[in-house]
Image (cartoon, rainbow, N blue to C red; front, side, top):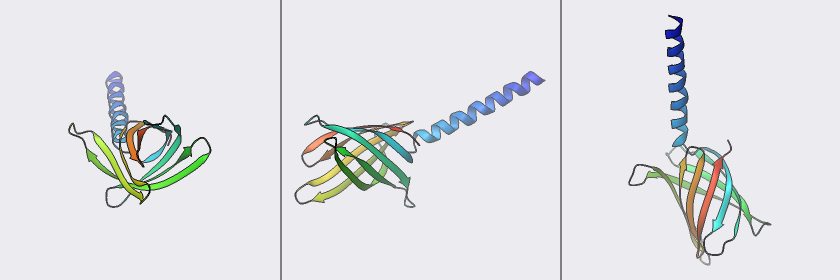
Length: 134
């Protein structure tokens, strides 16, 4: 009888922990840290983002980082959740940067504790790679 109860507790714990992990996999909410890398110039630098849910089902993201090792940047964008053709969660953003800079576009996937994506801005394109830290 004791062995049966132990197995039941182990099964419940497994299902609970596995369910919690799966819920996090599709939820980009949190703080992420990593880097951006230009595909056209090779420039790269550190970057962080705090992603928070909004009442309308989108997410507010505040990115901060550095360019050329010393030039800081910060910007906010709304991330629109959707799915690719395979049902994987995708976050997209677009933001006008003004008449001289054009617009910023980003597409990323938050899978587990990783956030990976691509961006295009001001004639540049590149990648972002981040890990969830909170």
